[in-house]
Image 1 (cartoon, helix red, strand yellow):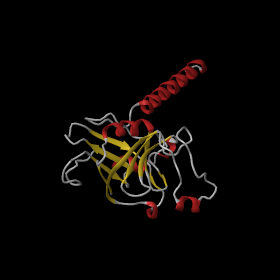
Image 2 (tube, one colour; image 1 turned 135 degrees about the horizontal axis):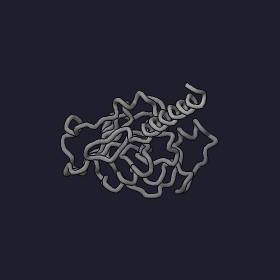
Image 3 (tube, helix red, strand yellow; image 1 turned 30 degrees about the horizontal axis):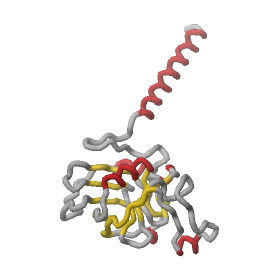
Image 4 (spheres, helix red, strand yellow; image 1 turned 120 degrees about the vertical axis):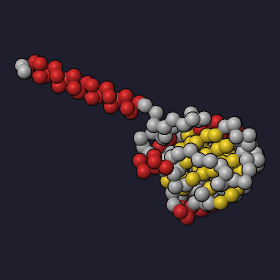
Length: 198
């Protein structure tokens, strides 16, 4: 084989390999019946991918009155079912940094806020005295575009402008979602929606 043909062959091999790799990377990582959700970007811990799967609500709730939200800390996933079971959603989340910041059990949505303001909790200020006392709604707000306040003081399910946090242990106790996902969940969840963190 001549040098010119060998170079052409190597270029073709490189281009076909690159095209195949690009096609694989551009393909959604997960497609669920009854949902348009997908796995978080490649920044997410790979160990999480195998446990990011759809679940049935019955093992976790007695009923779906006002809808139900299940947050699985281990798989870093939030599951949502509407009261009439017509909608099921599965979202990737951020979860608390450490076990001592993690609260498990049953609670409910008690308040919904679009454009939430943020104030660090006393324990956050103790750990991070350099943090501001108040951050208004906007691109610098750690609660993102929407927040669901839970009956537990200081705990929320909220958005984030820092998408690198999704799929990671990165919060001070709250559950974080991509802003587009919290906006969708915000539109479906109600005051009184059941929430279970496991």
